[in-house]
Structures are given as structure tokens and as C-alpha cells.
Length: 302
Image (tube, rainbow, N blue to C red; front, side, top):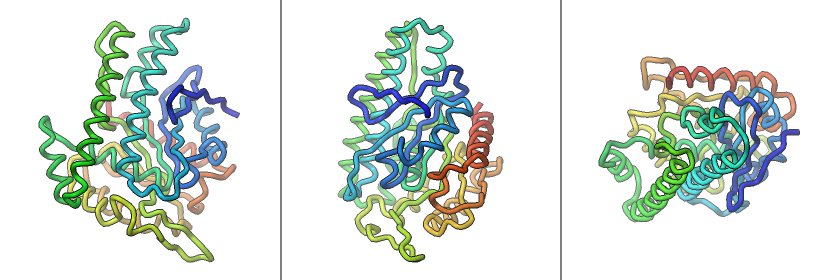
């Protein structure tokens, strides 16, 4: 199986491909996202075999963590640190300058989320919708969220901005040239697998969302944010499964909302399977579609 290296002080593990064509930043669902090497061992192996280096985030197991804004920003802050640590590690070895440049380049990075992990990617994408003075982003947040939550979000955003600046400065010093990180996930292709927003479960063929009223943002709030963010989601694709009753409502909403966002068609693939198909062993077709979608989104980005 693919071997992962730990990054000191980080919740992300790294698998370096010897000849990478891209770097996939992966976020799983609940509880799979807390133990990704166990739950997604086949998916991660297949993606590695396709030629991708992997950054796999493991969020602490906490069934009562309902502030998904906080989690999304913690993931991004962690990955800024990891990006910097990767360059540090490579800088201390005998790798070629070409490999250093590859991992320092934003355009080589992709986002892949599964189930609840897709919600974190959606939130980071929403935060990418801003102008130079952040007025547009602030207006969108104010239009969809309760005012009492805005100061905490602003504080967390400031912390993440500082983390990005520190990582950028450190990488620039190591490389001996200016190095830039795109704020949030702007210009980085992303792919949602069976996106699920409300921690929905299936019990005895019934789907329930017991934590719907505790999650922040709620399904209604995140739908409002997506509707209001009209300038983004142009580098996003989606894969859903025919017999997935857990993610069906969120898939229907996202496809309906995003399919007319740009002149290029929204990429939505419907595959045979259920919500837990990405956790299985027979996923050759799924991985080939992930690879195709990422390469298509990269072409659009370039």
C-alpha cells in the first residue's frame, strides 16, 4: 500500500509520487475523514497509482464538532503549513530544482472531498469570492449569516491570512525567489464526491439528519451562500452515485445551481453505486473519472 509520511505538528500526511502529475488534497467525511488511511486505502492507492502525490487531512474525531467554518479554516491553515514543510524537506535533499518548483506551484494542486468533506471545500470556495478590499465577500457573508457569527469568522480569516503570509515568506526565502499562495482555493480545481452537507445518516433504509439544527452553517445558510457567490465554482466538478439516498438532495441543489455558471458545461458524472462506494475496493472506474475530471479542470484553469 502507499506509504504516507507524517508532518510534524500537522494533521496532514503526505505521499510523494516519484513523478507526480498533480497533488491531490483529500478530505473525507464523518467519521471516515478522521481515519482516512483506513477507510480510503483503496481509493488513495488507486489515485497514487494514477500519478498523484497525496496530501490527506485527518480531522480530530469529534462527533459534536458542528462549527464547520472553523474546521474548514483549520484545514486550510494546516495545509499552508504542510506546503511549506514539503518544500523544506525537498530543499534538504538532492532533488532537482524542477521538483521543488512543482510543489511550490499552486496550479499543480487539486482538492478532492467526499461526503461531509465536500462541505469544507464549498466553504473555502465561497471565501475565494472577493475583490481587492474584501467588500464582496463581506457582503455575501452578511446577507446569509446571523450577525453574531461574523466577528468570529473575521477573526479566523485573519489568522489564516497570517498563516498564508508566513508560509509564503518562508518558501520565498528557501527558493530564493518570490513565491505566492492563492488565497483560499482560488484557481485550484476541486471535485466533490457524493457531497453531503447535513451529516445525514441512513438507518433501516431511512435517511435522517439528527444534527441539522446544530450545524453551522446550516443547509439553508450554505445554499444561500452558494446562490450569492455568482463569480466562482468555475473549476469545480461533481461525481454522484445512482443509489445514493444520503447525498441526493445536496447533489440536486448543486447541479441545479452550478450547471449554468459559465460558458463551459458543469462537469457532473453519475456513476453506479451508493454513498459508500468510494470506500470500497472495486473503484477502478471511479478513479479513472476522477483523473479525467481533474485534467479537464486543469485545462480550463490554464
